[in-house]
Image: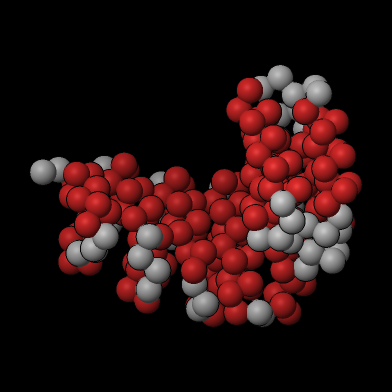
Amino acid sequence: MNSIDVLLDMEDRGDIDYFLIEIMRYNDDLEVRLAVSEMLAMFPCDKSEEILLSMLDDKDYIVRASSCDSLYFSKSEKVLQHLKKIAVNDYYIVRGYAFFSIGDIINNTEKFDQLDFLKKCFFKEKSKWVKVAIAEAFSLNCAEDSRYMDFILAQVYNKKYQIRSMALKSIKMLAEKEKIINTDVVDKKLRLILKTENVEFLRNDIMEALKMINAI
């Protein structure tokens, strides 16, 4: 049984072997390390957090990004500070996923003083993709400030489909958590963009978002 099969078996059994995980996180195969980072997200606990924290220094950005994403459950100040460093220094995809988990940790711990950090990063950040992540993190914790939701909505019109996709995923996440205040405005704008969006999977995302918003 290869390493991926071993991880799939753990997932099927709902049981994790940390001895094997500790070995596989150093595997030369990128896909194995990536699978480890994804697996740990399914077992939120101190041990998973410890391993994911170490994987934030992986040589491959895709593993670092996945490890950032998998730390959504953390309440640790140590993890928060590490993610904040990554959020301003790493490759843009890694920065984006670091901001997602920073938003989650603020939400988990109610450390709303960290919103000032998000504000500063939002105005300094040049990547629209990362700015959507920051805006989502902020909106998750302070939906009353609609400027960040307005920014996400504006990116649904972006020429780059990757950014449009990111914006729609953020809208769906915020709708799921009932963090959208101006639902009528969001509904109207999504219905307008649906008339012009030609990418099929994005059209599906828009229709899913509309269902979620109207359920709030």
